[in-house]
Image (tube, rainbow, N blue to C red):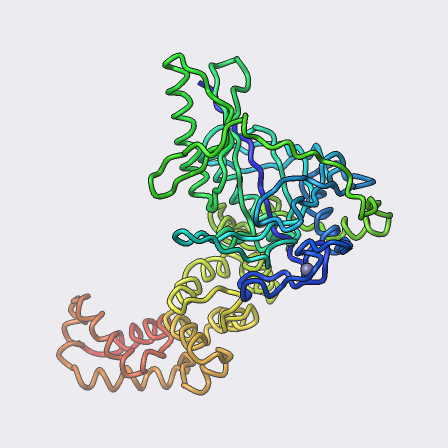
Length: 475
Ligand SMILES: [Zn+2]
């Protein structure tokens, strides 16, 4: 059996205000506080298009390699539901911002798939219904949020591929800084279309799955639905065209409505809104807002910085981390060292303190400073780890902490010889057995000398001086 998956992804664009009024567009505010006569659909009010939303919409469409519309038109999509105060939604239909695009998506197993984009259009979000017992509550703060809908062609085959697509897509929109893409907060949502058919027969009957609010649910719901449809076909049945919901408690999809119940939206051009025709200055700004996307960046990191694929993958997962990495490298620290610190010690400390890199006291400048101290052998590895911990605890520069706490490595030969002499005097018998080839005792004694220096003796120099010392001692 062959399977075909297309996705419809909605993202909230990161604008200050809503799409057609001046209300604040922000998640988490007190319900029904960001509302006005326009977004509540009072008679006689007039919508005014948010220029920033149009701009971000074009930025997304351009990044998805779409043909950009020279004249984009808002239309009314008519339907009745309590979360939609106007009883129609202002959306786009015949003239979306972009169409016929594509995106290259790295899939599990190494393949990079070209997934075609049918269209990318702008619309206003509806309010949010909260069902509690036999009550339904409504929050209109979300009504009128600028929403970008991206519709792919059915170029994906499995739940795993759809999940990989979403993770990649989320990175792309975060790189572009057009949306936070946060699925838990609903600023990125996904519906999926899926059909299966006998090999070579082309697309089957399409079933839509709604309410997929995490990429993991997308994977589970699609894999369930593919198996369900295969089961029906194998038993000689037919698939009904319908909309189903993912039930996350029972791990299955359930019928929501069938085709007979589908709406006729009676689209028509929004009479209160002129079409938008981007001028060359606008389009130039759209071009300037394009950025190196994650896959490109990864290839460049591997190539230019000679770091492993795995390290590069870690770094490019977030644009902030990738930029941070390059900032430290520009300070003059070896890329592989920076990468290993970021994925290792720094990540451990972030987890321990419940922070992310952008909110942590370890700025790029501070990590650069710390690694330079290490490179110049003013501290050794163990002290560097200790210093990193202190930077997190005290929110101060590592060099200042090092000086204040006297953590600088001791390289002065006379001082080191003094430690060796002191310890040797304390353990004459041990010195004797080391001279006779007892290597275990040697480790013990070096440990004692290190202790004496409070862990600050330069390890290699200490080893060297200890050897010199031994050769001078008569057995
Ligand atoms: Zn409003």
